[in-house]
Structure formats: structure tokens, C-alpha cells
Length: 179
Ligand code: HEM
Image (cartoon, rainbow, N blue to C red; front, top):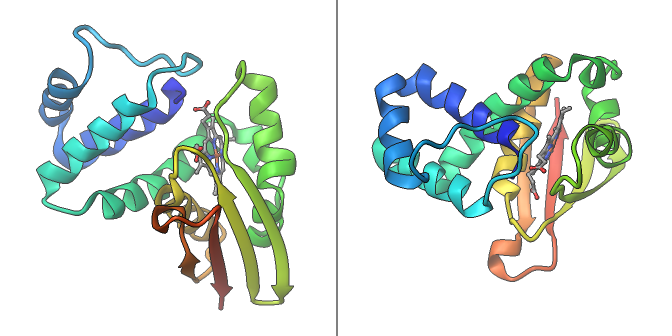
């Protein structure tokens, strides 16, 4: 996983728990002297271990922590890559463009990024169906990112997750209901 994602987690942890908590997490779950640089790749396991450490500190399940992380990560990524996020006038437009525009731009910026495959179709005016597939199975983080995007456009969003890779499905299905 790219350093930029770790930096997003670092920002969230420092805001919520303070600098000392982040230093403790690094000491416990990262190699000595680790500094995350945005364009560099680090092992996925390191991110999972850090997120698990955050979950332990907060006494919350990992899935909940990944969702909270995803939500704050959207703002962090949109701020870091202003040009990309500003292309879209609505939540629907942005979500329909995750694979074809947003992550496509990410491929130009980062050398061989590890990206999920995300397919979205519009069911009706208030409903989008999103299929998520990735060997990293970060669907809860994807849910959080979607909530972050809804917040960005001041939309009220609820998500159903009827089919999940964590339960053996080939891909996750997320049904996005907008108000
Ligand atoms: C609601 C919108 C978005 C969703 C649902 C989404 C979903 C995801 C997920 C779930 C991952 C983790 C990797 C995986 O699952 O295999 C990821 C990675 C990433 N995304 Fe997005 N994303 C969104 C918007 C954005 C935006 C706005 C940017 C920045 C312009 C961005 C840039 C990235 C980057 C840099 C990575 C890491 C690539 C790597 O580690 O090599 N994403 N995205």
C-alpha cells in the first residue's frame, strides 16, 4: 500500500489519539525508523497491523476502524489531489468515475499502484450499485470512503452490503441509497 494511505491513517490517529499513540503504534507494528513517504509502497500487512493496533487502542472492531479510516481518508486524498476530486459536480458523478477517471489518474501519478476494481451502475435516481473486488478485501474502507464522499457533497447516504468477499463472495456488492 502506498505511503499516502499510511499518512492518512497517521493524520487520523494523531487527531483522535495524539502523537504519542501514533509513535507507540509505529514502535509496535512497523520496522524501526519507518517514515512513510507518499509515493513509496509499503507492505499491506503493515497497514493492517497498524489498523488492528488502532482498533485495540479504541476497543472497537477492525471493520469499524477501517470504515472510520476510509471516511477521513476521502477528505485527505481529495485535499492531496485537489485537481482530481474537483472534476466532479456531484456524488453520483464521482462514484461513477472511481475506476475510469479517479484511479486512472492515480495510475499516472504512482508507479504500479495497488488499486481495487470498482464497477458502478446507476439503478435509479437514488440508488447506485457498486461492485468492489480486490485481493486486499478493503470493502469496509471503501464504505468509509463513500461516506466521506457523500459528506463532501452534503448528501445523506446509507449503504447495504449484501454480498461480501469476507464471506467468500467473488466481489462485494454495495447498494448505495441516497436521500
Ligand atoms: C469514493 C471514492 C473512492 C473509493 C470508494 C476508493 C476506493 C479505494 C480503496 C478501497 C482502496 C484500497 C486498495 C484496495 O482496496 O485494493 C483505494 C486505494 C487508493 N485510492 Fe481510492 N477510492 C476513492 C477515491 C479516491 C480518490 C479521490 C483518490 C485520490 C485522488 C484515490 C486514490 C487512491 C490511492 C492513491 C490509493 C492507493 C494505491 C496504492 O496503495 O498503490 N481514491 N481506493
